[in-house]
Length: 237
Image 1 (cartoon, rainbow, N blue to C red):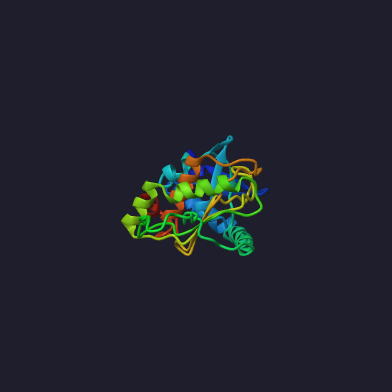
Image 2 (cartoon, rainbow, N blue to C red):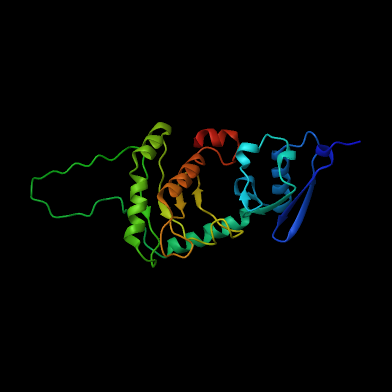
């Protein structure tokens, strides 16, 4: 007679379609995650698994036996194609505005012979850019500036000798934790541009600063590792 762990089946629902996976003694959570990526097109880094209304901590369970997972799971996540569509939309918005160096201070008239020195770190976020046409642009610029001047992030850039060409605002497409397609950040070409979703879904406010910082930490780890493997999470920490 087979044990319960040998006969258990996990059913994952994704956009109305059900995917069933038998759990054998050697089946790990990572095996299920890899199968989901193959069957749905949603890469591991974009997978959010929900059971009984709560999110499953994949990172903590990745090497555990899949039998630890609930029998019924809902998958939320975006495919690489959908993410690229968001990035393309973001780039189209960026192309409509002139990129300017918002990190440079506004030039003011100063008395002659007065020399003002400003130390510019060798490794830094070179420019920031907010989305035009949205409310509270100064607040958005303030958030990006605060991130770009954060001593912790600057120390990380210096340690790894990284430069980020542009730190920009991403348009908040979809609802966080609800929509199937919802991207919080993108690192383009390993530091050419990092875009962050800093506004709330309804555009009436801004996401919590700590949450935005966490996304930036995540995107900086992509300066080295594209995949969300153990090396990626070690670097992110």
